[in-house]
Each structure stands twice: as C-alpha cells, then as structure tokens.
Image 1 (cartoon, helix red, strand yellow):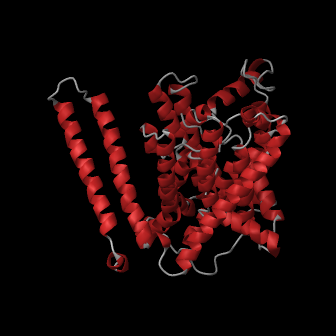
Image 2 (tube, rainbow, N blue to C red):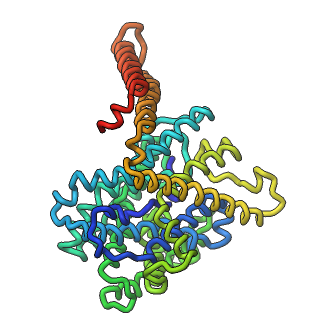
Image 3 (cartoon, one colour):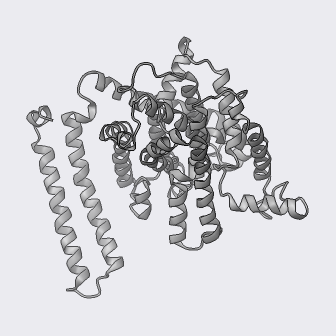
Length: 473
C-alpha cells in the first residue's frame, strides 16, 4: 500500500510559464530557499528510521517539507497564471500551457520511469498492478507518491485559480472542505484497520489525490495577495497557529498501545474530542497541522531577502529551481539503496533500519549517512537539471534529439512486452482459461498478437530513423 507519509516535491509550479510571461513578474528568492530546505528535509526523511525521526521531534521541523512545497505551489500558481495573461477557463486550460507542463514535469518523469523499469528487470522486482494507475514506479522508490499529486495539480490548478480570482475566500474554504470530505469518506467507509485489498487501493487513491492536499495550496494562494503577518487579512493565522500546535503535541504523544495522546487522555468530553479529531483526520499532512507550516512560511517570506546575493544564496537558488529533478533523482537513488540494504523492506515500501542492517556501532553514523545521501542527490539532480537547460540553450531541446526519439521508441517496444504479460494475467484473472478453446484463450491470443506486433513496429521505427526524420520534426 502506498504511504503518502513517506516523503516530498517538485520543481516549482513556479516559473513554469517562465519563457512566456512578461518580465514584470516579481521574483521571490524566499520561495527557492524554502524549496531548497524542503528537498533537503525530504532526503532526510528517507534516510532516517521512524524511531529516530520521532525521537528528534521531526513533526515540528523535518516533516514540514511537503506542507512547504504545497504552500509554495499555491503561491506560485497565482503568479504564474496572473502574469501569463490567461483569464478565462479556456485560456487557463490552453494547449500551450499543458505543453509547457508536459515538458517540465512529464518528460523528466518518463526518463525516471524508464530507469525504474530497467532496475526492476535487473533486480527481479518489476511490478505492475492497480497501483501503477496511481503513478507508482515499476521499481518503487521513496517519495514516488508525490508525483501523482503533482500531475493532479496540472489538471486542477487552472480551475482553482479561476475561482480564486472571482471569490478568494470561498475558494480557500472549498479547498479546506475538499480534504474534510475525503477524510469523512475514509473515516466512514474505510476505517482502520483496512481489511481488504480493494479498500487499501481506494484509500491510497484518495490520499494521492491533489484535492486531499488543497488546504495547503489554498493557503499559498491566499498569501500571494499579501504575506505580511501584520496584515489584517491574515488575522486568522493567530488562531490557526495555536490550534495546529495543540493538535501536533497531541499527535506526537499518541501511544501505539492505547491510541491516545496527552490531550486525548484528558477526562470527559475534552479527551473524547481530541481522540475523535485524531481518528477522523488521517495522517500528519493534513489541515489541522498546516497552520504551523503556514506561519513558518510567512516568517520566512518576511525574513529571507527577496533577491539572491552572494555565492551561497546563488547555490540555494539553483537547488530550489532544480528541486523537482532532485526529487526524481532521489527516488531513483534511494530505491536502489533500499534494495541494496534490505530486499524485504524494498518490497514492502519501508525505510530500512540502516544501523541494524549495516552493523553500525552507533546511531550517530546516521549523520554522515544523511550528508552523503544529501550530497549525491543534490549533485545528481543539479546535473540533470543543468543538462536539460544546457541542451535547450544549444537549440533543439534534448527530448527532440535523434537519440532520445530512438530511446522513446525502444522504451515503447519494451513496454509493449510488459503490457502483454500484464494483459494476459488480467485476462486469466477476469475470464480464466478453463477451456483450451474459449473466450479467455481467444482474448489472450489476440493480446499476444497485438502487443508483439506493436513491439516490432516500434523497434523497427527506432532502428530505421535517420537524420532526415530528426530534422523534419
């Protein structure tokens, strides 16, 4: 089962219209700094066990990565659409806008997907199932779940921005209501413990839905109109902050045995209320905790300079802009690391106990372990991001090169064989092969013919492409 509480984020929903917008669009170095901090926390989240993270109070700082990313996404969404000049729903959902997002997000993810298939085939852990529909990689890596959230935002954000322009308060309220409705669905129909595979899949689909995270996005939208804590329009933060802190304290003190936090243990209706909220609101990426992250976001926006100055701030800026590619590289790198340390944990999508598995004499070795992971992920992601920028600056984008086109056709050929295998499994489960000549056998034969034919066509195209094909695109 997918666990959204395992990760991180993406590159920016930020300057995605960077090449098309007017130069007057304001730049906020604070946003890049927050994304850089968030992606560093993501790598830490996947380098430490839950026991260690609990012992260091990670909920109050390290687990802020996703809330920061979501708030920044909402903030950037407002400026991206505002300075694109789009006003109507038709303009906001323009083909050009989707093409830009496809180049920025989908193409890099496709590269990761191909690498994941190759690693899955090499390790024998190649997996395609119902969770593939939610964006799970064929060879799972930590943080994979956030990709589904990001892709969902591409579809939902234009409508949210359009409504926000007309009714700001109503839009933010609806963002909060969206999560409440989804939480209610899980609380009523899929309470813990979930006893069926179908129930687990539905809950995963709910928790990987961008609507589940809209409260934080709505806060980012709201702050795009003014992020000063002293502004009258932000008065609610002085109420929201203490509420979040109270529930966070209760959450971190919940006992696994009795399922009650320090406040839930209070007598009578007070304790009952806290217990109900903690049972109703599932997970630590939720609306009752976003107030704390939002407050820190506003503090950061006021204290961090608006422009990057000096070499260190320039590096932070590059990390923030490359945060999506760092996330993708981290997913790939950590998936191999998990598999190398503990195959069982990799299969069950769990963080290995690195100290135990590698025989460390002290848990203090997690510090250099994290720093090594941080360095490798930053380096890999920055090089990847820089290579894309460099290839685009040279003229034709890298994804339009002859080599990448051939790779794409070969990838399609490989996927055809994989899909053939999965389709036969599906046919056998749904229809069955009880008779030698029957509906199931006929369907399987047709599937084999179709997918093998498709694989051969794509392979033929890959090896017969020439420079002429490349230049006419």
